[in-house]
Amino acid sequence: MSDPEIVIMGAPGAGKGTQSDHIAEEFDVDHVSTGDAFRANKDMDISDLGLEYDTPAGFMDAGELVPDEVVNEILRAALEDADGYVLDGYPRNLAQVEYLDSVADPDVVLYLEVDEDVLTERLTGRRVCSECGATYHVDFDPPEEEGVCDVCGGDLYQREDDQPDTVKERIRVYRDETAPVVDHYDDTGLLVRVDGEGTPDEVWADLRAAIEDALEG
Ligand code: ADP
Ligand code: AMP
Image (cartoon, rainbow, N blue to C red; front, side, top):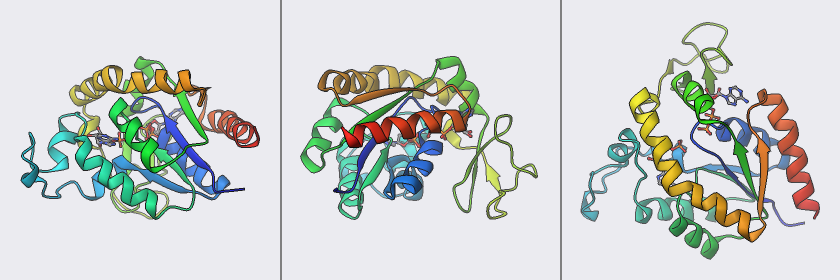
């Protein structure tokens, strides 16, 4: 069988990153996250493109999408190096769907369904390790020692775009630009909906079963 090609979708805070780590390990694929790629290159100089901001950070901190010409190139390079993938955070609009079609052929698109009130609570309580990127939640998944990563001992921080005002804008952008992508994959028959509101273990059990079904079918 060829290497699995898996897309995971869901609003900001739906649990894509948390579940992608399980998927990558279980199905032996690379976790490709455009959000992580931008966080690692947030001060990249894109001033020659004449866009609204001169770096990805400008768009990210405003809760907006980084323009397609920047993200598509990052995606192409990441997929070129991957032996199978779980793609997290892309595609986020219909033009990105078209671009993805030109460089890859996903087996399944998983959609984590989570209510908006729950998203806000998850995002504003999220904390991330500055060293290894591990994700925590102040109430739902706290580290053993406040502010310190269980995995590597690094300092935990709150993402700039997890502040309440930016969270609101990101959810609006998701509704306007990314929800049509979910409808698109529903129409093409690739979409599998999974309830994202259980505990992380419950969500993982459902997701794993959905992926096994999709890859067998
Ligand atoms: P996304 O990648 O979709 O933005 P994350 O995986 O980073 O979302 O999860 C957002 C926040 O919610 C994190 O703080 C994470 O610890 C927490 N979280 C993830 N899944 C669950 C869950 N099933 N129940 C409660 N909290 C969760
Ligand atoms: P995420 O970690 O997926 O929540 O992404 C954080 C931020 O990175 C988003 O709010 C966008 O500013 C940017 N970003 C990530 N993926 C994309 C994408 N596919 N298209 C445009 N911008 C993106």
